[in-house]
Length: 316
Image (cartoon, rainbow, N blue to C red; front, side):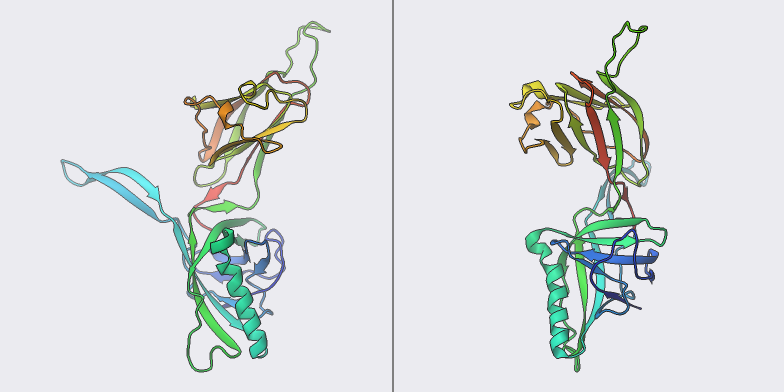
């Protein structure tokens, strides 16, 4: 079954109908190259087609299991390691004449092979209900013509192999949690009151994905130290007073990435030394619900914490 590519659509509102693909059913597919150019894969009026018959690698991630022999027979599973994913993507390219075909062949080939020089492209799979998942891909091999009689003049096909360093599919829409300090009040006026100037509170974060995610945190000042605690005791502290930047002033921000570990101020300063190493655990969010607590020292009106993550899934 042919699926054609052409310029510019959004995965949330595809303008072309979904098609049936092996392993995942009906979907609309878009490839986004490293420059951000979008190549929809289901426009049946364009001049290049992804051949659905032969597509593979869209299902569950591959794994390597490490086991130890058991003295009573059999074995015991010791470790599970997800492996890079390989996606096979057959493509047919055509043109009204040889000049048009050559231009299409070169343009689409460049869109994939530039991933080896400029960073990964993205394969997006959108469903009829509006949801969409994506995966980062690198060109591995396959942009070769068939080399048969009549090919290479006004049409030809290639079987692409795309390599994915992270085998999991990621939700296109980010999940966010926002907590902000309210206005400070006098403890005794009009009656004993506790303000939110220190603890932004305990909350439950839901990861709807199949596997753990590594979130990113953005803290908005004022704040002098920030403590993030997961319900199992995993914790890390960012002490701004221990950095060259000093305490966050009102409106200043700092972003903490958990994978890879990275701490940057809003103007790009490296503040990773402010983490409480070696005790710091830049924890992940497992699937399901997780109780977490955000605490800001030196907080005032406007102090805030924003948690952002993209759920990850086994399949497209």
